[in-house]
Image (tube, rainbow, N blue to C red; front, side, top):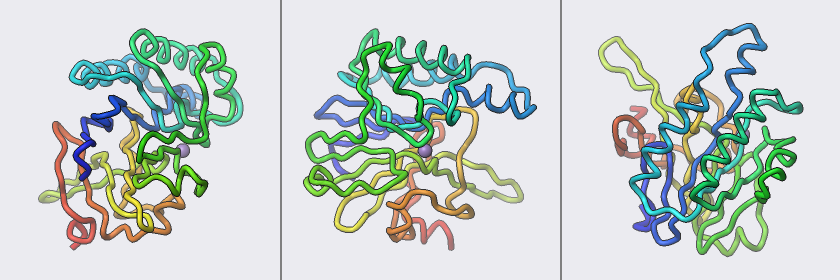
Length: 235
Ligand SMILES: [Mn+2]
Protein backbone atom coordinates (compact mmCIF):
# COMPACT_ATOMS: atom_id res chain seq x y z
CA UNK A 1 0.00 0.00 0.00
CA UNK A 2 1.01 3.61 -0.68
CA UNK A 3 3.16 4.83 2.24
CA UNK A 4 1.20 8.06 2.31
CA UNK A 5 -1.93 6.15 3.29
CA UNK A 6 -2.86 5.01 6.74
CA UNK A 7 -5.99 3.05 7.53
CA UNK A 8 -7.41 3.76 10.93
CA UNK A 9 -10.62 2.12 12.09
CA UNK A 10 -13.19 2.99 9.39
CA UNK A 11 -11.26 6.00 8.13
CA UNK A 12 -8.43 6.57 5.70
CA UNK A 13 -5.73 9.13 6.40
CA UNK A 14 -3.60 10.85 3.78
CA UNK A 15 -0.48 11.68 5.76
CA UNK A 16 1.15 14.29 3.58
CA UNK A 17 -2.12 16.12 2.89
CA UNK A 18 -3.35 15.71 6.49
CA UNK A 19 -6.74 14.73 5.20
CA UNK A 20 -9.05 12.24 6.87
CA UNK A 21 -11.52 10.46 4.59
CA UNK A 22 -14.69 8.79 5.81
CA UNK A 23 -17.56 7.35 3.83
CA UNK A 24 -21.26 6.54 3.87
CA UNK A 25 -22.31 7.64 7.33
CA UNK A 26 -26.02 7.45 6.45
CA UNK A 27 -27.21 9.68 9.27
CA UNK A 28 -30.93 9.30 9.77
CA UNK A 29 -30.84 5.57 9.22
CA UNK A 30 -32.70 5.08 12.49
CA UNK A 31 -35.51 7.36 11.44
CA UNK A 32 -35.88 5.58 8.17
CA UNK A 33 -36.06 2.26 10.03
CA UNK A 34 -38.66 3.58 12.44
CA UNK A 35 -40.80 4.77 9.52
CA UNK A 36 -40.75 1.20 8.31
CA UNK A 37 -41.97 0.11 11.72
CA UNK A 38 -38.61 -1.03 13.07
CA UNK A 39 -37.92 0.71 16.35
CA UNK A 40 -34.32 1.25 17.27
CA UNK A 41 -32.95 3.48 20.01
CA UNK A 42 -31.68 6.85 18.82
CA UNK A 43 -27.94 6.78 19.24
CA UNK A 44 -26.49 6.95 15.76
CA UNK A 45 -25.29 10.56 15.89
CA UNK A 46 -23.76 10.25 19.33
CA UNK A 47 -22.02 6.95 18.58
CA UNK A 48 -20.77 8.16 15.20
CA UNK A 49 -19.17 11.21 16.81
CA UNK A 50 -17.66 9.11 19.62
CA UNK A 51 -16.11 6.68 17.19
CA UNK A 52 -14.82 9.47 14.98
CA UNK A 53 -13.35 11.39 17.92
CA UNK A 54 -11.13 8.42 18.77
CA UNK A 55 -9.67 8.59 15.27
CA UNK A 56 -9.40 12.37 15.08
CA UNK A 57 -7.46 12.76 18.28
CA UNK A 58 -4.73 10.37 17.11
CA UNK A 59 -3.92 12.25 13.93
CA UNK A 60 -2.90 15.68 12.76
CA UNK A 61 -5.78 16.68 10.53
CA UNK A 62 -6.52 19.77 8.47
CA UNK A 63 -9.48 18.60 6.50
CA UNK A 64 -12.17 15.93 6.68
CA UNK A 65 -13.57 14.60 3.42
CA UNK A 66 -16.85 12.72 3.39
CA UNK A 67 -17.14 10.48 0.34
CA UNK A 68 -20.89 10.75 -0.04
CA UNK A 69 -24.09 9.48 1.55
CA UNK A 70 -23.70 11.57 4.65
CA UNK A 71 -27.43 11.22 5.17
CA UNK A 72 -29.64 8.30 4.49
CA UNK A 73 -33.07 9.06 3.14
CA UNK A 74 -33.76 9.70 -0.52
CA UNK A 75 -35.85 12.60 -1.70
CA UNK A 76 -37.22 14.25 1.37
CA UNK A 77 -35.34 15.32 4.44
CA UNK A 78 -36.66 13.78 7.57
CA UNK A 79 -36.67 16.09 10.54
CA UNK A 80 -34.23 14.23 12.81
CA UNK A 81 -31.96 13.67 9.89
CA UNK A 82 -31.46 17.31 8.99
CA UNK A 83 -30.96 18.22 12.65
CA UNK A 84 -28.45 15.38 13.11
CA UNK A 85 -26.66 16.28 9.91
CA UNK A 86 -26.16 19.88 11.02
CA UNK A 87 -25.01 18.80 14.47
CA UNK A 88 -22.55 16.40 12.92
CA UNK A 89 -21.17 19.05 10.57
CA UNK A 90 -20.89 21.57 13.40
CA UNK A 91 -18.90 19.05 15.40
CA UNK A 92 -16.38 18.76 12.56
CA UNK A 93 -16.38 22.44 11.60
CA UNK A 94 -15.23 23.44 15.07
CA UNK A 95 -11.76 22.15 14.17
CA UNK A 96 -11.50 21.19 10.54
CA UNK A 97 -12.23 22.20 7.00
CA UNK A 98 -15.00 19.93 5.73
CA UNK A 99 -15.52 18.81 2.15
CA UNK A 100 -18.48 16.70 1.13
CA UNK A 101 -18.75 14.66 -2.01
CA UNK A 102 -22.24 14.08 -3.22
CA UNK A 103 -23.59 10.55 -2.94
CA UNK A 104 -26.68 9.01 -4.48
CA UNK A 105 -28.54 9.44 -1.19
CA UNK A 106 -27.63 13.11 -0.93
CA UNK A 107 -30.21 14.57 -3.29
CA UNK A 108 -31.37 17.30 -0.95
CA UNK A 109 -28.20 17.69 1.08
CA UNK A 110 -27.41 20.87 -0.85
CA UNK A 111 -29.90 22.81 1.30
CA UNK A 112 -28.37 21.56 4.53
CA UNK A 113 -24.76 22.28 3.61
CA UNK A 114 -25.62 25.73 2.30
CA UNK A 115 -26.51 26.65 5.86
CA UNK A 116 -22.89 26.04 6.79
CA UNK A 117 -21.20 27.29 3.67
CA UNK A 118 -19.77 23.89 2.76
CA UNK A 119 -19.13 23.02 -0.83
CA UNK A 120 -20.80 19.89 -2.13
CA UNK A 121 -18.52 18.42 -4.77
CA UNK A 122 -19.02 15.80 -7.45
CA UNK A 123 -15.49 14.60 -6.81
CA UNK A 124 -12.33 15.81 -5.11
CA UNK A 125 -8.89 15.72 -6.69
CA UNK A 126 -5.89 16.24 -4.45
CA UNK A 127 -2.37 15.49 -5.65
CA UNK A 128 -2.53 11.93 -7.07
CA UNK A 129 -5.81 11.09 -5.41
CA UNK A 130 -9.24 11.17 -7.01
CA UNK A 131 -11.98 10.84 -4.43
CA UNK A 132 -15.59 10.26 -5.50
CA UNK A 133 -18.68 8.46 -4.27
CA UNK A 134 -18.35 5.57 -6.70
CA UNK A 135 -21.95 5.16 -7.80
CA UNK A 136 -20.99 6.19 -11.33
CA UNK A 137 -17.83 6.38 -13.37
CA UNK A 138 -16.29 9.80 -13.72
CA UNK A 139 -13.59 9.68 -16.31
CA UNK A 140 -12.60 13.31 -16.75
CA UNK A 141 -9.20 15.00 -16.97
CA UNK A 142 -8.71 15.06 -13.19
CA UNK A 143 -9.47 11.37 -13.13
CA UNK A 144 -6.91 10.59 -15.82
CA UNK A 145 -4.30 12.71 -14.04
CA UNK A 146 -4.61 10.76 -10.80
CA UNK A 147 -3.20 7.38 -9.88
CA UNK A 148 -5.34 6.38 -6.91
CA UNK A 149 -9.13 6.40 -6.77
CA UNK A 150 -10.92 6.37 -3.44
CA UNK A 151 -14.62 5.53 -3.37
CA UNK A 152 -17.43 4.77 -0.94
CA UNK A 153 -20.93 3.59 -1.91
CA UNK A 154 -20.18 -0.13 -1.80
CA UNK A 155 -20.22 -0.64 2.01
CA UNK A 156 -17.96 -3.68 1.79
CA UNK A 157 -18.00 -6.24 4.55
CA UNK A 158 -16.87 -9.82 4.77
CA UNK A 159 -18.30 -12.65 6.77
CA UNK A 160 -15.83 -14.88 8.47
CA UNK A 161 -16.75 -18.30 9.75
CA UNK A 162 -15.07 -19.94 12.66
CA UNK A 163 -16.32 -23.33 13.82
CA UNK A 164 -20.05 -23.01 13.32
CA UNK A 165 -20.23 -19.30 13.98
CA UNK A 166 -20.03 -16.61 11.40
CA UNK A 167 -19.43 -12.92 11.95
CA UNK A 168 -19.49 -10.04 9.50
CA UNK A 169 -16.85 -7.31 9.56
CA UNK A 170 -16.56 -4.09 7.63
CA UNK A 171 -13.52 -4.01 5.38
CA UNK A 172 -11.47 -1.92 2.98
CA UNK A 173 -10.87 -3.29 -0.51
CA UNK A 174 -7.63 -2.31 -2.20
CA UNK A 175 -6.87 -3.28 -5.77
CA UNK A 176 -6.73 -2.04 -9.32
CA UNK A 177 -9.20 -0.34 -11.62
CA UNK A 178 -7.62 -0.41 -15.06
CA UNK A 179 -4.11 0.99 -14.47
CA UNK A 180 -5.01 2.89 -11.30
CA UNK A 181 -5.12 1.95 -7.65
CA UNK A 182 -8.64 1.66 -6.30
CA UNK A 183 -9.51 1.89 -2.64
CA UNK A 184 -13.04 1.12 -1.48
CA UNK A 185 -13.93 2.59 1.90
CA UNK A 186 -16.05 0.70 4.42
CA UNK A 187 -19.19 2.56 5.46
CA UNK A 188 -19.16 4.65 8.62
CA UNK A 189 -22.77 3.66 9.22
CA UNK A 190 -22.38 2.26 12.72
CA UNK A 191 -25.82 0.61 12.60
CA UNK A 192 -25.16 -1.94 9.86
CA UNK A 193 -22.12 -3.91 8.80
CA UNK A 194 -22.68 -3.56 5.07
CA UNK A 195 -22.86 -6.04 2.23
CA UNK A 196 -20.92 -9.25 2.29
CA UNK A 197 -18.60 -9.16 -0.72
CA UNK A 198 -18.50 -12.96 -0.79
CA UNK A 199 -22.24 -13.25 -1.40
CA UNK A 200 -23.87 -10.04 -2.47
CA UNK A 201 -23.88 -8.33 -5.85
CA UNK A 202 -21.45 -5.49 -6.41
CA UNK A 203 -22.87 -2.00 -6.68
CA UNK A 204 -20.13 0.27 -7.94
CA UNK A 205 -19.34 0.32 -11.67
CA UNK A 206 -15.68 0.70 -10.66
CA UNK A 207 -15.81 -2.74 -9.06
CA UNK A 208 -17.93 -4.33 -11.75
CA UNK A 209 -15.12 -3.52 -14.16
CA UNK A 210 -12.35 -4.78 -11.88
CA UNK A 211 -11.13 -8.21 -10.97
CA UNK A 212 -12.24 -8.39 -7.37
CA UNK A 213 -10.35 -11.64 -6.74
CA UNK A 214 -7.10 -9.71 -6.84
CA UNK A 215 -8.22 -7.11 -4.30
CA UNK A 216 -6.65 -7.14 -0.87
CA UNK A 217 -9.03 -7.28 2.06
CA UNK A 218 -8.33 -5.17 5.12
CA UNK A 219 -10.75 -6.16 7.86
CA UNK A 220 -11.72 -3.54 10.43
CA UNK A 221 -12.01 -5.02 13.91
CA UNK A 222 -10.18 -4.01 17.10
CA UNK A 223 -7.43 -3.06 14.62
CA UNK A 224 -6.94 -3.44 10.89
CA UNK A 225 -6.14 -6.96 9.67
CA UNK A 226 -4.74 -7.64 6.22
CA UNK A 227 -6.46 -10.80 5.02
CA UNK A 228 -4.62 -10.94 1.72
CA UNK A 229 -6.30 -11.30 -1.63
CA UNK A 230 -9.98 -12.09 -1.93
CA UNK A 231 -9.31 -15.22 -4.01
CA UNK A 232 -7.30 -16.66 -1.12
CA UNK A 233 -10.00 -15.83 1.41
CA UNK A 234 -12.59 -17.60 -0.75
CA UNK A 235 -10.75 -20.91 -0.99
MN1 LIG B 1 -24.19 5.38 -2.02
